[in-house]
Amino acid sequence: MARQCPREGLLIMSQDNTGILIVSEADCQRLISRGDAFEAVEAVFASMARGDAYNFPVIREAIGHADALYGFKSGFDRAGLALGLKSGGYWPGNMAQGLTNHQSTVFLFNPDTGQLKAVVGGNYLTAVRTAAASSVSISHLARKDAKVLGMVGAGHQSQFQLRAAAEQRNFERVVAWNAHPDMLPSLERVANDIGLPFQAVSQQELAAQADVIISITSAHEPLIMAEWVKPGTHLACMGTDTVGKQEMDPQLFARASIFTDEVAQSISLGEAQHAVSAGLLDASAITPLGAVINGAHPGRSSADEITLFDGTGVGLQDLAVADVAARLAAEQGAPRVSL
Image 1: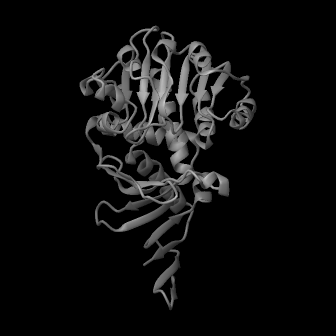
Image 2: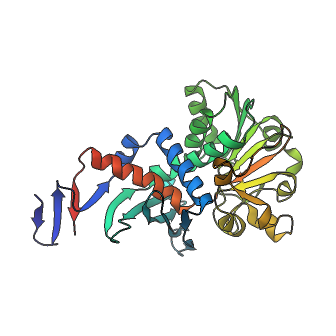
Image 3: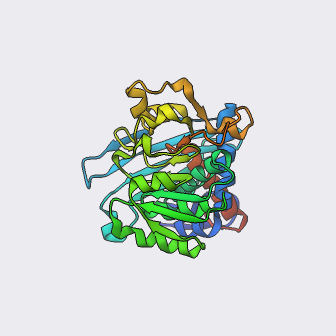
């Protein structure tokens, strides 16, 4: 039975199947593995490409306080029956306070009734689902013989990216660059932990050596130039999710085959926004990664082809992994609350 809270009217600790699940950050870290995230993201990309799932328009605004960006991502997956939204954003001063810069919470609703069914911590899930998206792209698009992984960026999410990517190919070493070199040792420790030699290099050296490049920064200017990237490279561009952000030279989009999570976001707020505005790329030339997963598109066509995944980060990714976390929490008897 639930217990009444007399002042606020909140029913807490319901042990039956009614009420709202509260899944904490600690719960998510305990429940969701990289494999879980990979499977959830791969499945929802496939569902999107089939037309079974769709994202609602993104709201993302500067709030005029703490230099923060705040907004909402939401959607519905008819196949997986995941309905909800992620509320949160980016607070650049959080690291100095011992907090992660990305802060978010996922709200899941019952698609049959519209009732709120779960509130799920979104910080860990954002990192693990973003890493899952790039690793799904590596799995389906990178050369099978890729040996060198290049990491552009060494912030909080880069560690998740490195661990997830290393599970997709038999990489022999990692080369990395970051605007603040003092942050690279933390990424080096992750590489060493998974048994990969690590070397800090320049941006141009990174592009010349890497078979797979992951960019995960908050940059607003090109970090990798088109002429630096060698044939056969796969790039997962994961940092650009807002109008004005940029990590890649737009000319690269004229050399590469372009894939994305969602075309509408790619051309409006993803990395492709700059190539499209410069007339170097048309939206019709961008392929949803889900089409490759479903077998409707062959993906990489040759060993020399440059492939680029524009990972804008869609709300359905968050809902997919949060729904798994909520299901696993419910299976383990997590308590519920009722408003």
